[in-house]
Image (tube, rainbow, N blue to C red; front, side, top):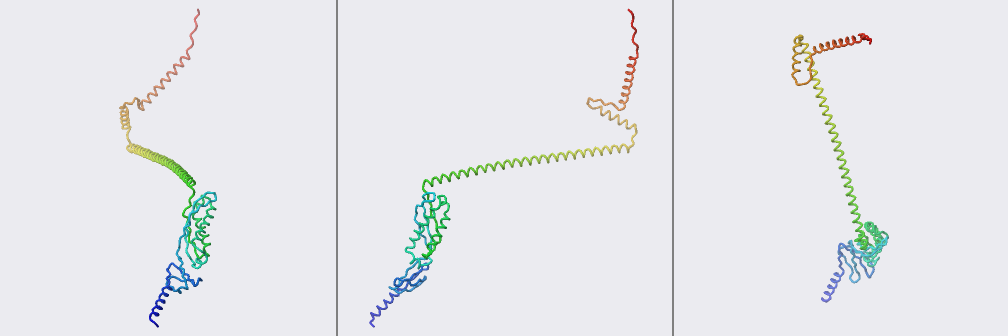
Length: 315
């Protein structure tokens, strides 16, 4: 066999081998078609196909994001809002993605727009602004069910914005400001009320404690005074008992008692008092004199009553 023919055969075989070797990346799956008909699905790695007969289509199975363009939606209370969202999905079956739907990405975006319009249209403006999680969940369920036959799974849906008209936004801002001011006034009033209550309660407790302290102090003072009087009385009683016992034990004579009596009278007369102290014996003499005076007075009155009247003289 001529050398040029051998070289040509070797080059042809080498080129065919190069054309038949296909590399699939880890995040891809490959669908092989032969003469336009689906043959098989190949996994990541090195794969061989028949050049010019087979064709390989690579499908990305990573999670991907589709941006839903903004659109105007009329809510249930006839307010126009602008909404947009993002859809995250991943391919689960490359065969269905290729052969069950044309332009899978475009179909998913259009389906998301339609269902987003329906969901927001069933809600009022206030509900649509406060129900993002509800809208996201419902939209994800609808898209996941619809794309299941397309060989894809919608993992999550996120609303980017829900923007009402400018006049509505301004009115909402005024309403929010008024509500915050009202809450501030309410909190301020409640704080003032609580402070007054605490102040009154503190004054009440202070007065109670003060009254209790005064009562306790009075009680202690009275107890101390009582103890003092009892102690003094007991001391005086004991002193009298000792003096009395000493006097009786000493058996004093009448002369000694008379001397002590006169000494006591002398001490009593030394003071500057205007009172007069009369000895016990003098009171007996004075009382005798008083009785004699009363007898003489009675006799004189009896004499006057017994005297006869004077005789009348003739003219």
